[in-house]
Length: 303
Length: 311
Image 1 (spheres, helix red, strand yellow):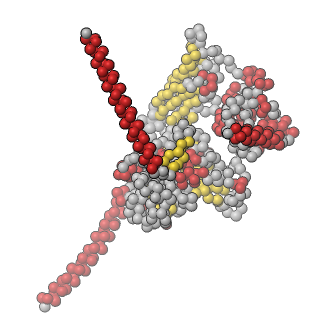
Image 2: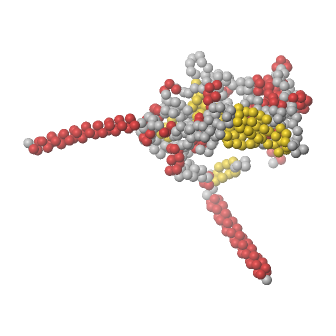
Image 3: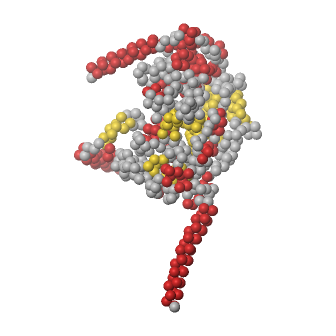
């Protein structure tokens, strides 16, 4: 047993060494290294980057700084660690773009903007550059009991969400600059209708245009969930509603119509009619012939 | 005085209760023992299973039972009727497909098919001499004007209200007219005894999954109709690692990507990416839509056997 663990430990060390060695091999040209992130480290860009990160990077790299990456060999880097973040923006950009080994290329899967947003998100973990983040960030008062209230303007199909929290002095205050998701329940997932800039304003309010052509059920009802997109700050805050502002849709049952492709019960009338006429016609001819033959023999016996 | 008696009776009750429980314990442990002995007597084949909490356990194969509990009549009836109010569609994004073939293996697992039998097949396509080749997954198109159901002499293959075209292997006589009628070559015939026929011989036939497969009948893609009943995406859709498949309800105008879980408007997806259907000139009205292989995320050198293309 002890032997086994020694062997395992040695293997792990060897792989770790190989990993670091291959990381060194990953050469990036000097011009590529010099590239700078054209997008500022604003709160909005970081949260956009976080979304891109979670759909494209998290499955292998895990959460930044948490070191919960997939146990692959070589192990995916913890993208929030200082060891990783010593690289320049251009270096990270190049690696995301080109990929290597198990790391796929994101040249075409992610557009330039998304790639830079991810880098902005990763930079927010960089202890040496944290100041840049704070410059644009909005500071909300410390609050508890965060709530989302919803006003519905059925005529213009507009939804107004109001995000508030209870301050320490007992008053409710609107929370600014928080991203909200408006999700409509569909058969296999949630349709996001919040659009690009779904951040609350200074009063904590956010106005959303409900899509005018989105189908609902027979009565035009849909299930709506509003929630704070980033669950890290206030936990899971969501509000569920049934709205009656979608387009009422009557599902068409293809079996209501008679069609060529239908089974026996759904065959078109003209097919059934012509089939029956054909069968009756043919059999009547046969019967007629038999009848005549019978008559012939009868005539013979008479004469 | 009354208190005393009641106390006594309670003690009596506890005593008798203890005896009963103890006896029950002994009996049950005996029965457990005998069961264990019986199991030890016939050491059957064991299989490794992963429990819900991630533990690997060894289970005797004889103790495993198939999961279908509904009687045949009920399965047949609900399979014929379909799911009310739905209209299922699939969108296949050819620019993402890099021939991972996970859809095919997931499908073959689900429908008990051999590796050479395809409900869904990833084809290598090249439209003309100087056009770029691409990979194209091809399931049954679940046409709204299906040529296959028109030719079936025994009403075995049919279309349901949610748009899915199914085949009832209990009715199928194996004439293969439908295979000849299908312009997409979406159907297969079970020429020999199907895979694991012996293993699944006691399983109730499920028309929504075509399992167990039957020798001498036709089998085809079913959009995993049994999974749709549980609000799950079809096997191929959820198995794809590259985000190729979208699946959803046309009545709701929404389709969900099986890899990322992202839900988008069906009409917008088709409009913005110039979606098309296969052989629409035949008037079959397919329910499977394709997005052209534009802006591909990977190199394709046109060689199906090249290691680089088999990701």
